[in-house]
Image (cartoon, rainbow, N blue to C red; front, side, top):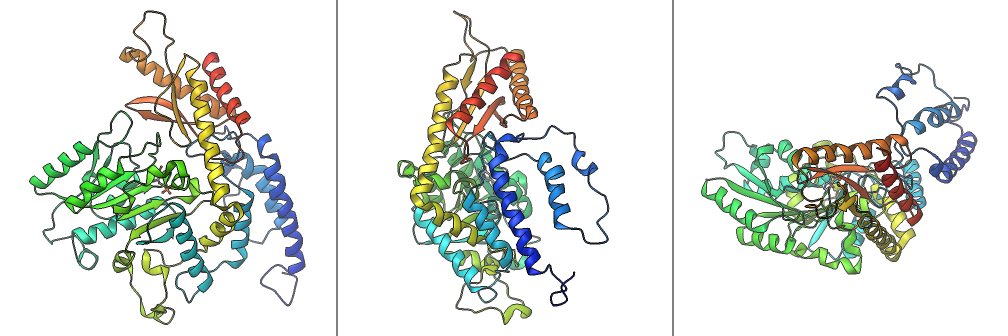
Length: 492
Ligand SMILES: Cc1ncc(COP(=O)(O)O)c(C=O)c1O
């Protein structure tokens, strides 16, 4: 480095220039994103081929690095922030979210204890509490920010395991004649349940998938029966996971009924509201919150529906001390850094080093306000319902599940000649062909770079799925997306 006073870093006037270049780059990128392909159509390895296999020996200039971002990285990306990105749970980038991320970068603290960064710790508590109030969760719940809901459920189930099999934290699972612990969730629930069971030594086969009803909600009678049957067979129900916004259809389990059952049987209730939790901020969706007051833990992903850039997930636990008891462990070399009376977030999970995630949430939530968030979520619901109407008006397609929040699942079906049995009853061979056809439509669209959607299986049949959520997606974009689906079905 050239500056003798600051040999280890870029001189500040040069950094200033680079930041201006970067500011323009970011603003230009947001402006031109619509003109980019939504997704590349390259073979695996195409990006790697353009990159040296060995790391550079000497440092390279920022200009050169940024040039490679433009020429190699950006064209090799699926642009989740593109207005025609309609896949998964339509992710979003927003200007305030970008600013929040940029602000976080120069601070670069480690928020493991209160003392290692009081502002990061206290702001984390503040934003967790804002969200709690926004979604109407009682103040019996305290929270912690993790990267993802998968990590949140792992921690929640670790506490459930400790309560079902006390002293497991200390003694582990081996040679203690513990009962076989069981976790119950619907056949529509996310695979993070099994991942957590694997990591916790409970075993993925002890996650019992309960059938869902016609609306893809867990059948509570079957749930109760299965738990009772397991008990009779000497197994021990440990937790039930109810979902508010399932991954395929965004269906909502009857959480109130599940909560009653869990209370009666003294089983931990975890609510996976990774997707649907944010919608509880919208007054007409307050029914989503039914039963939450009886839950033991609930996970919400503001990086899905409350406009915080990835990654940002909040786990709430009723009486947060239960979580601390399982994970608090202060080694000697950190003892001096902890202030007992203050919250040290390292005590609430596996992670020691923690980035300052709260800052970006604070920036975006202050920028949009509750009203701004609610208005945007309502916009997604409006678009989802509109899309469902368009689908219903084309008899080659059917809506495959009740549209829920920002999610619409639909399927190309055989056009029904008059007097025929109808699209609901194709022969198995025809249904298989239709599965392939629906999958081909999605693949063809995604390869075209014009739009991006996903596919899933419902009752064993392939359906197309659109998830709204991107703030740049307007009615015109959605209309264009729908026309691309229709056109692709015709040409195929
Ligand atoms: C219902 C549900 N739960 C949990 C998850 C896992 O979320 P994460 O990627 O934050 O681990 C997802 C992901 O889409 C999901 O849809």
